Amino acid sequence: MVYNTVTKANHLCVLLRERLKTFAVGDQFLTIREIMREYDVSQSVVDRALARLRADNLLAVESPRNGLIVAATSVVSEETAPAEPEILLVVPHWNSYEISEMTRKVAEINSHAESLRLTTRLFEPVAPIPRGLDKILAHAGGLILLPAAGVCDREDTEILSRYAEICPTVVFGHHYAHTGAASIGLDDVAASCRAIHHLHSHGHRHVGILVSEPFGSVIAERVRTLEVYAAIHGMRAEVIDCGIMPSENPVTKTYDTFCELIKRGFSFSALIGISGESLLGAVNACRNHDIEIPRDLSIVAIAGEDFNRTFSPPIDTVACDVPGQLEEAVKLLLELKQGNLSRPYPDRYRLTELLIRGSVARLEHPEKP
Image (cartoon, rainbow, N blue to C red; front, side, top):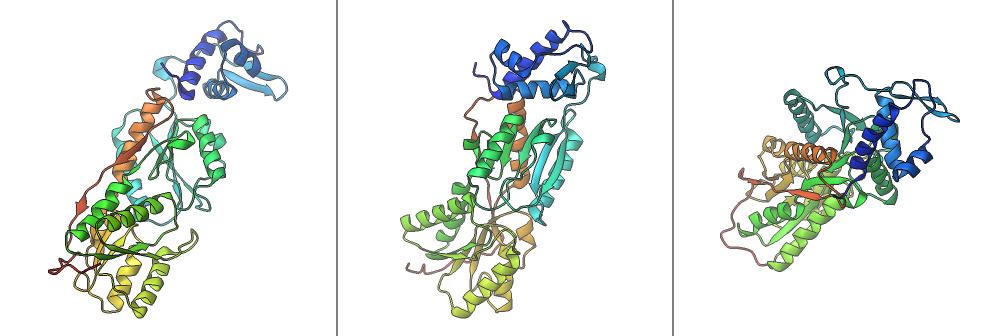
């Protein structure tokens, strides 16, 4: 059997609990180096095991120089044992329909799970991966993280890898398994193919690809997939990048960008919105310039399934299924906690469906690319 860091720490914790019975309360406990040498484990494994023993009030810090002393020699009975540590759901601090969907899903999970509780924490989206979670993660039952938009650089990757060493970690909405964290996200290739195939099957041969949020790995994969599909099927694909930065309002900037595009004139017959709410800016620009959907412009989006049905008109949507992704993330985290997975951890991909709402018109005579 291949043991991951979490499994090793759990095993070491069991051994050290037995070892505690050979000490008296107030005795000096083994040092980290002594434990590493005697049990042949890394310092990260020792740190995790000792953090668990300290959380159970079996060990206490006497002083930085003197190390740990024995506070108790056995744990409380199973009937009075402390509850399983909460799992942290860490998401960007922004107003978003997706965040609202997650909040509802968290409430549903907490109301049905007997030994599982999710606690949501927000972080300022100045970088894709939040900083400074080390201390709180040492006492958490796991981390489920939704990164902010943008490009994940080397520092972000190193921070996420460190979090994965501290406690079981799952990234959702993105695929970051190379960092040491497991991940679950939308199958972006399949979603993009489904969106452009929907247009192709309706006779559209020249499409616009609207990039209306900060460019990152997810957006890059969707754009590339759409361009490849278009090239293979003899279509023209035109990318409209609104140049959104993390600190900007994507709906407003998308609106301004699309208004300028309308004034200059465009030749594509259909538009693919490869992200969610910011597409509203383009839809509003069309409405305010008397461009009727789908008569003058067909639109399909990869987005939250419920939000896009509130547009005027409702938009055909390849559903991101954020609640489903979160549910899968919880299942994946439990597999990590139970030691059922070993590195390299998996990237799991969630397939989704196309919801037809009438925003794509059929061209009777397919245009030439």
